[in-house]
Length: 368
Ligand code: OSB
Ligand code: MG
Image 1 (cartoon, rainbow, N blue to C red):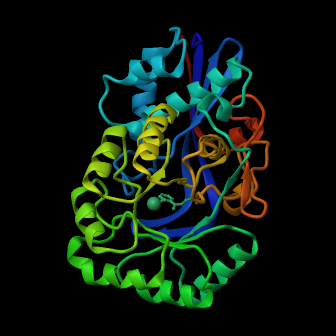
Image 2 (image 1 turned 180 degrees about the vertical axis):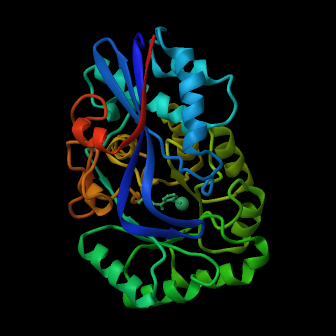
Image 3 (image 1 turned 120 degrees about the horizontal axis):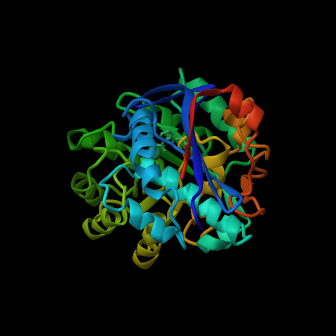
């Protein structure tokens, strides 16, 4: 595949809800969108980094700089026979997996379109529908939380994840557990605790959570391993898992018994496939995370979630929960807690260009 041109945009898309986590409040997404052109086809990639480095270190402006000034000039005009060869071209540059993933994943879309296959078949996916749950932000009150949980369980979502932070944890989880004794329930702390908070975390053991997601430092493995030895509840790693090497070390240390996969956090699909293989060999169940993606990122996640190692419900819920209007034509909607994997070539969704144009803050075309 010869890369002939690229269009990079920054979009702003308002969320339908206020999404509060331990690291802040989101009311809109600022989205880096890449259209990559080659052999008469178009591949799409969506950045998941935010304007500020509150989840991990990457930012929209940092990624825009790298893509515009470094990564795209490096690959445009060149021929890449497969996604691995494109990944090689980016490998001298350290870190910045989310910025790399925008390009790597757009290339996967283009590559799969070149093969006239839906992306999941290229990746080794085996399902046409994937099981999903929802991630619910911190609500104003426990009563609001109970209402939100009930509404989403009624819609068929297979797992409820509540965002927690010190002071908003045991009590709200206990109320949900009492009201919904059979629900699959998890908690995501987004690195809000330290080992010194052990007593508070240990109390969660009585609530039969499926796992606790990323309780400790955003780049930590060692303290998570120490904590996991003292907790009955499995720890699920999110923020700390940024590469196959991190995953290998997490397994060796016993830093978690469940992994959340976000291809964007891992630098793209190729690295995600490597973590998938390691996790399978170690008996670690996977689930597909989410970063409030619009239609392009959501479609990429659905394709990858079709692989056999994704045995727990993911965070890839209906697009209509997030947006009045999505950036793609196709409605990515769950039914009975199952999200269909698009079946057309590549990621199988198409940009709604007039709408994308209306929400574009900045764009630039780069040619080979
Ligand atoms: O930690 O999984 C997370 C959203 C933004 C940043 C981090 C996380 C999340 C979510 C939302 O939990 C998942 C989604 O609905 O896309
Ligand atoms: Mg998380």
